[in-house]
Each structure stands twice: as structure tokens, then as C-alpha cells.
Image 1 (cartoon, one colour):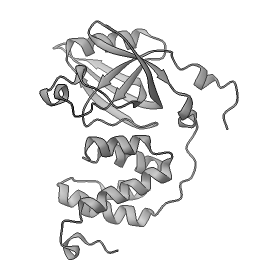
Image 2 (cartoon, rainbow, N blue to C red; image 1 turned 180 degrees about the horizontal axis):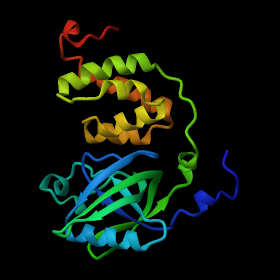
Image 3 (cartoon, rainbow, N blue to C red; image 1 turned 180 degrees about the vertical axis):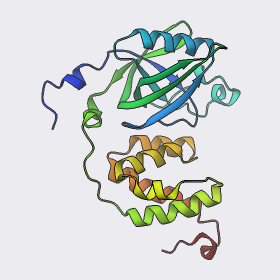
Length: 225
């Protein structure tokens, strides 16, 4: 249980900019590279870099008319996102920012604030996710089943992987990385974000990959139930 006074938690800001981006999932302790080129989001990055915490809230747009039309900045978003700290950035010759976010803590949107230079801002409620700020301990899950499903799933999706690196990855890093990179649907990625803990997220990963393979011949998929 977190103490009443937690410096890491108490340092979280009362407002953050949000970046609605379909298909992009940021999780606590994960790293997400982004290529920023829209003027409103360039302004957002400049403001974040000028702040002490350098935090941006990554959120998923719902499948509304705005999202379908491509205007993610105006789309309705899911109520839970993840704040990420800019840990690396590079400004290109043509004015883009190449940044890397490291996931810090999930949040619920307590309210939306007026836009600033075209980008959206919210009041984040981090209170339900204080545990995100703690070091990740051991995880009890069926690692062999996850790796078995992953190999077949990646083959079906045409995704190449360094399997030695995958198999040597620590559990927390493996679960977080797979949840972020696998090409699941938006609602599936959101469910992974909202999973209560790493064990639940790992179980959900296994289920999502196995369900994606159920339309294959069982002999081809290599999965057995």
C-alpha cells in the first residue's frame, strides 16, 4: 500500500496535454517512439519540454465519425490513458520531433480543459493507479503458453522477432512490450491498458492471441485446448 505521502505520486501534475492516437498503446514502464509533425502536437511537445515533468497523456480515440474521418484530435476518447515522460527527443531539419515516451502512470480523465494552441488538455485522476509507480516484482502466469501462442500469432501476422531476445526477456518487460506492439483492435488495446495487474494483462494477451488464431485449422495454428 502506498504511503500517505508519496513523492513520486505527489509530483504528478494537475493537468496534462493528451495525444489521441489510434493504435498506439503506452503502458507504465513501457517505451513508445513517436514521430510528431502536426502543428498542434509540435506545440504540445514544446510545452511539455518546457515543463518540469515533461509528461504527455496518451489516449485512444473511440471509433466515432471524427476518428473515422482522420481528425483524431477532435474524436471522443476512452476515459483512461497513460501519462508518459519524454525521455528522448530530437528535432529534425524539417521541423518534426522524434521523441520517446516512457510510461509513468495511468489516469482517468476527470475533466477536459480548454484547448491550448490547438491541442487538448485534461485534469487527470491518477488515484486508482498509484501502484504503477512502484517497481514491478515477480509475475505468476503461464509463460510457456504465452510464448507458444506468440510464435504462431507473429507468424500469422508476418511479424519478425529476435526469439532469443524474446525468450530471455524478464516477465514484466515481455508482457508490457507485447501488449504495446501486437496489432490488436483499439478496444482490445484499451482492455490491456485497463487490466488490473500484470498477471491479468498476461492472461488477456494469451486469450487475444489464441482467439485471433481460432479461425485457422488447429493443426496449422499449433494450439491445443
